[in-house]
Length: 116
Image (cartoon, rainbow, N blue to C red; front, side, top):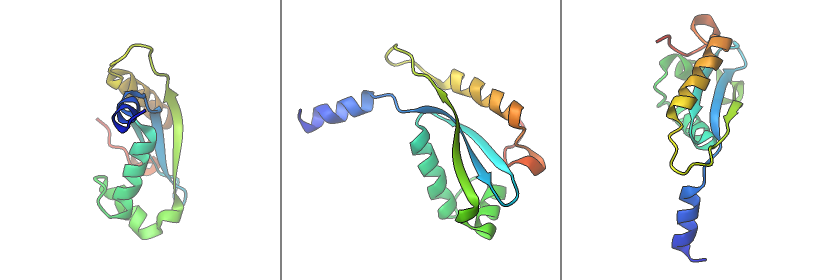
């Protein structure tokens, strides 16, 4: 296989998607989010936090004050891919995220998420 074919196959491969949380193990607060590419999104969140660029200022502040070693990144749930090519998973991911935020209530003293 040539390089172009390998790249094409990679782009067509559905990455693991679902719900993840970032947990501050020192104070127990969590941040819950969804992703179409879980590992890619987790890597992005780590990069933003490490470089003091995260949009969630409360979580960023705690990360800077307590240190990286007190934050864990955990996958909570996976969304099973459909056998239909080009399916948009946005609605299903949003519903799954709503279910997890309802269950965990990651707001205020318990978390970093903002209520809608």
